[in-house]
Length: 293
Image: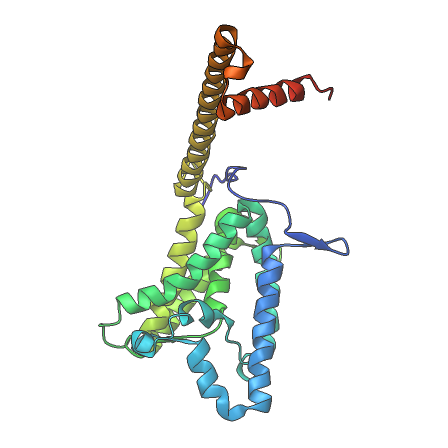
């Protein structure tokens, strides 16, 4: 975690999505708002329809043991938005504050498009890893709910970009990450919580690998390569359109020359409707060129 640089300026939008009364609204702001609204939705179910909570959980949370059987494929993306205020308490507010702080810094560094890709990666990598390891003992009953692991992934991204950023003025961000990795690894091992251990390390590896491949560190990474490939495709499309335009211009010029030659031989009355249209198009084009700008 050393020698860092910014990603290519072509990698995404670095400007806020919009402004509200002069306050910039970024993707992180919208994501935090979505999590808060999801928490309110769960609290509403708890308060007004408590008997419906299991059904609500089955529709929002991810269950590795019955993912394919239930047909709830959308839970691959919705599980981070399950927040039970009865169990989360003040930790939900702390999580959202930390996410807002870390997320904005990461988004501003790598750009909104890359940041959205990172967030989606952190969401899907956990359930995919659990399903891949599902045959192993202890992983068949795994489930996912809440965004705590994703927040940790965003924190890893922040520490990868700003490894020497100081917390409380005494400890660097990279050491905070290593402390959390060590403590929770020992915790999961002691409790034999293999799903939690898998999720924790998969999230850390995915976040670190993505940021490094987003150009943070020496040399270009995967995201730079993808961005360069996208720019090359756009350039090829522009060249193809320019060549098609020039071919069309040449065809029109040849048609005009052919019509003028026919007029010189047989007179204007000899032209058919299509040849008259060729002359009209050429006339309109000349008038547009001569029109003062």
